[in-house]
Length: 258
Image: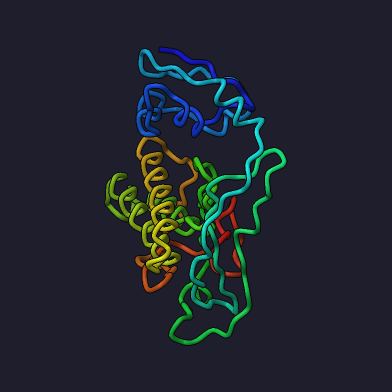
């Protein structure tokens, strides 16, 4: 069945949350492979939904107008010290609405003294910038979950290079991407009391993975970078993707959360 969205009121997540019977994000993408979640916020879009599905519009309207405090998680562990900086972040599960309490900052950076055991010299010196076509750090995800930026950079590189250099399938690039995102989650939230934040991060990683299965990015890096230099970024001992070297030009948000 066809359904016409209301711009400024509905988005991809609200369609999933307010559908009856329940509709998964994956099912929504299967029915609408060309869906742009960003477009729904700006204009009315006609979607295909399973026959008999209804969207609880009153619930959507009530959520838009009621006050809602920000709901956020615990601080993650500090990242390793690189280039004199380290960072930590916390999840935001619900943005504030109306007169609700605003969200505190979700990202902190502080100066530190790099140790030889933690520094990753290979991606901060003696390496050329990857200046081919547009690795862009997840420019159009369902959520702007920026800590996945290195993983997204790698995914762009893998997609762009696989036909000529890597000889691997698109599915393999997608699978590596998913593993790097999960490494990122564990790198930031590796304590027992981080269980919920780590689970939330895993959930968003799964959504990103499901999205890339059905979509082509179109901003794939074509300049060849020898293995394994495009897996140059580590967090907590695990590879998490490609970090754009300091001093190199950025595309989109490709340098966020180095």
